[in-house]
Each structure stands twice: as structure tokens, then as C-alpha cells.
Image 1 (spheres, one colour):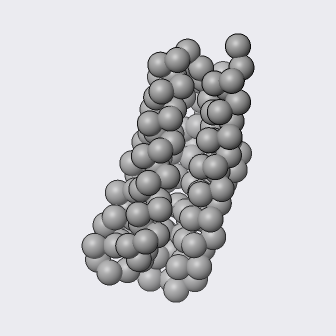
Image 2 (spheres, helix red, strand yellow):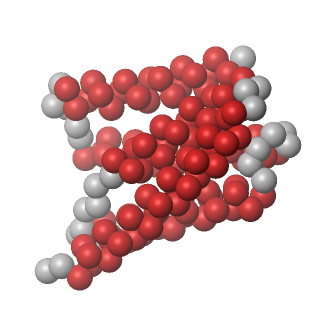
Length: 141
């Protein structure tokens, strides 16, 4: 049942973004809430998998949660300062890889572990990318 719920949620999230862009119906609220929903979705499932002793180990879960906390806090601070940081393609790719890896892990496919670590590396890389872009935004007039 968890697999079905996860697959439906991930699929609807994916198509929601595509449909919004194709219909030119992207809203400011959607641009704010969609990345937040993605972070909560991935973090909560990773935490649940950790609690079920599947994956990730505590250090990987801590990195994932710390990255999310830094990015969410930094994004809110930039927004408060009147700056807007867009989602990057690396961040989207990292989210997609993590979602697929979690789907495989929930399905019991061993390869999901390696895909999770690859997604985590991309996720951390996108986090550093956001930090660098945020710093540039703050330094710009």
C-alpha cells in the first residue's frame, strides 16, 4: 500500500509541474510551495525508511535533513530580503533520482540503495549550488 501511495504522489507531483508550465499557469504560491512539498515528501519518506532500518544510515539522513533546513531557511531569508532564487535543474534531477531510489527501496530492489547515494550526492551538490547562487543574489544590487 505504501508503494502505491508513494508512486501516485510522486507521479501527480511530476505531472502537476509539467501541466502548470504548459498551461502557463505557474503561480507565485506554487513556486513557493512545490519545492517545500518536495522537501517534506522526500525527508519524511527517508525518515520513515530510516526508522524501518531500510536506508539511509543516520549520517546520510542527517545530511539530507541538514541540506533541506539550510536551503529552506536561506530561501526564506532571500525572499524576505526581496530576492528570488529559482529551482535549478540539478536540484530537480536530484529530487527525481531520490524519488526513484525511494520507490525502488520501498519495492525492495537492492539497487535503490546505490541510486539513493547517487541522489544524495546530487542533492548535496545542488545545495552548494543554491548557496553560491544565493550569495551572488545577496551581493547584487
